[in-house]
Structures are given as C-alpha cells and as structure tokens.
Length: 174
Image (cartoon, rainbow, N blue to C red; front, side, top):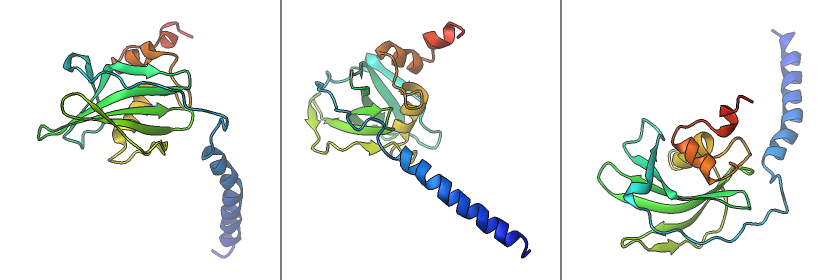
C-alpha cells in the first residue's frame, strides 16, 4: 500500500496542474470583443406556432418554443419565446436568447396577460447548467440549437432540428 501512495499523489498533482489551465480556458469567453446586437421583442406566441420539445420525464410540465419567434442574430445569439404549461394549467411565457459560443443564456422579457411583454432589467448572460430550473434551456441548447459552441446557420436549421428533421449537412452525406 505504501508503494502506491506516491504514485497516487503524483497522479493527483499532475491532474491538478494540467486540468486547472484547461478549465480556466473553458470558463473564459472565446471572443472577448463580442458585442450583443440589437433586437426587438416578437409578437406574443400563438397556439398554432407552438412546437413542443422534450425536457425531462421527471417534469409534469409541457415545454414549447414559439416557432415564429425564433431568430438567429448576426451576433450568434439564437432568440426564441419559451412557453411552459404547468400541470395545473398555468402558463409562463419568456423571451430568451442562447449564445452557443459561450454556453450562456439570457432572459429578455416575460409575457403578461393580454400578450404584452415586460422587459427585464437584468442583462447578465448566465451559464446554461443542466439543473431543474435551467433544464429547458439545456435541452434546447444541446438538442435543438447549438452544435457544441457553434450556433445554427439560420432559423430554418433550428426549425428542422425542433421538428426532428435531419439537417442539410446530414442529408448531404458529408
């Protein structure tokens, strides 16, 4: 046992030394010069434009994206309206953005009765963490919007992914 202790210690020291710079690189923005572009809030969601997507079998809620609200900005941000229907019938509506390059999301506005938006004051981009609160964003980011740190080419690419259609890249056989 005493022979293994120095080997284990050395391995742990190497792990710490080599992983710390790698983790630090992952937590920094890939483009420090990035600036968020301007955008306007979309029209309130219509029932016919809602596309349900899977979030978790553990949640009794139903999650939708308003297809008409999806925009891929020149700044690389994918903006969309998220609709969550609870098991009790309540509906939460938010307009949000996902930035694939940094793995972050931002809330722009919350929906109010009557179809009006209430802009939020917090302009901070938050990390997309796969926990109960952020699970809808993690599901959208991982399954429908981002290809790792790469945003979709355009709105139609997001729609194809949400509808379960193969992307044109996949169809070309390349």
